[in-house]
Image (cartoon, rainbow, N blue to C red; front, side, top):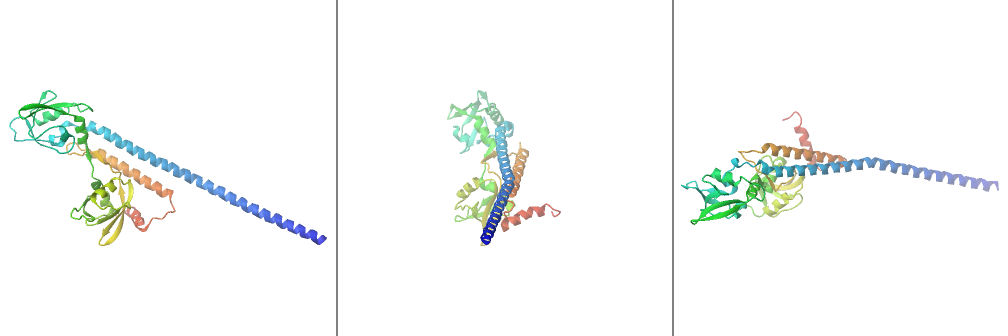
Length: 326
């Protein structure tokens, strides 16, 4: 009887001990999970804050671009242009008046109604006999919607042509950008079966990445292109940031990380008479700084992710160049 009682007491003690151990283990696990969640919370909040900051940066850049577009028309100065800048060439050998010798086949001026041989007589009722007078009166009012009345003599008869100067201003101050020039290459048109680089433009993404003349483009941002038109479309739609580009060089595939700025289909014209290099270079510097900050934030978001060999080499290069070596 006493033995049985001692046995039951022993079993009870073992059960209490096991229960205590299980509860302690569960408590420790729960505490660890809570601590882990607490540790993750600041990281998640930090990532969310950085993502929000990146979105803010993108919106700021877009706002600056829009401001530059809106301010482009304000920078237009009629004294800086010649008639060929709007698509009209005048006969320099004409003895009297302004006679059109050629007209651009593209652009707004090609749809205005001018013809070769037209003699320009007046603009909005003002007689014009010189090129600068024609341009001055044509752009006297280049507000949106205004139409200037240009009277020309054609076949011995006067005809009135209505021109909207604001469209000519918009076309002049902005130029259409070529995606391949934006990337920094000129393709060799002797090859139709592959995309061979004929020339690399200085101070461009391709130039800084190390792409050389003779390289054959294999992929851009993971996409293959069979023609220059398809390739231009891929480059145009590429997002700003690091883009992987594969080329074939000496029968070997080489991969480059190319830092691509945001492609702008149209940008403000740069001229010798009225340069806007300061404004544009300032904008480019700001965008480069924004992209560098974004990349730093992205690396902080994934500190344990090791880059591949090529990326590691390319990340190391700037650190070496920032030292004492030239």
